[in-house]
Length: 429
Image 1 (cartoon, rainbow, N blue to C red):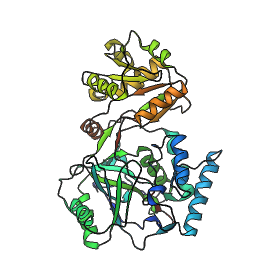
Image 2 (image 1 turned 90 degrees about the vertical axis):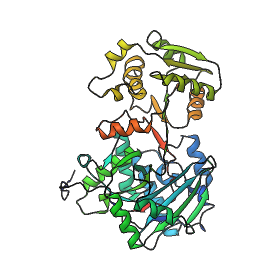
Image 3 (image 1 turned 120 degrees about the vertical axis):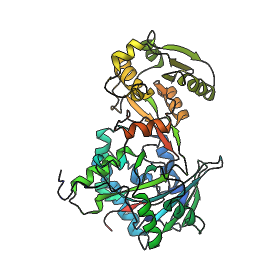
Image 4 (image 1 turned 45 degrees about the horizontal axis):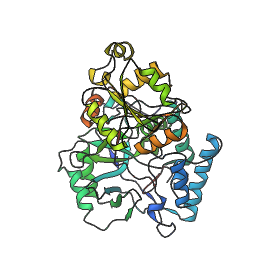
């Protein structure tokens, strides 16, 4: 990799969010803005959700973020060709001037999230400006990098959080923008309303820049895309458009995120075999109750220690009270206690590696799914085992990240996640 042109920062620079000319759907050329959006690429439940999105509108963004073809090369060529065609046809158009974009998500249950979409300077981990909290899978980073190279675009923003003081300059710019008519407004099938505004005034942009320079950010969602940004930045001599990547930045002091778990679907491991392997090492209780009650039981058990919920055979099975001697043998001892006692740590080190011998990076053996009901349904349909986890508290995630300790991959799901397809970034403008 060519790292020429990248010098080490001599002083902390903080978050550097830059305006860009957004690439957006022309609402007159598509069925509806809601019909062309998608969840982030790694949240789409495949193949069912993928097919539903493809059928929703011929211009749905999923055709760019998850192109379908026989080989990886063909998929990336297809996405690049699709993007070029949509640009030529005017389906996607470029905004006339660089802007930061205020993005709002609102739900009837009271959830309100607002943040700023812009391009963020891609920093080295040693700078401590952007804090990851999860490990990544190299093959996914390679796949996303190949797609970004082929399309020369950031197709969807990743989600970063920072802790402002609640009424800083950036927060004021965000809230003042929402008093104007939005660039777009739509409601997606999940019940979330989405609105977008542009911020182009020099004074507002300067205020945001000055405010954010004092802060560091936590990667809430998009570890693989951030690792991809870092890889592509290293490949291109600086300065270049690859020095920055597309992000949504949310001040969680003002707009707290929700933290959910990411569940595991173990292919080829029937529930009976999974239970046989853990008996004598965990307490196992069968729960013949609906999903909601089973999750309540999991939450109660998680308050006392490590706990997991297995499903796939028509019932739920609560695993808790692991054998301390087994944990001592299987969980690495060279990390902080907060990391060693994570459910995700015990799942990967003790259950997957030791008892079930399921490789965590083999997509033929394990899938990572955000939707709880979908994980259970797929396990029951395919004859595998669903492993449901209880979410980690945000403060635990942030504390570990500040210590430079990464959690096992796919440990958390912060949300709501930004909808893909509302604003894109072309790097070759």
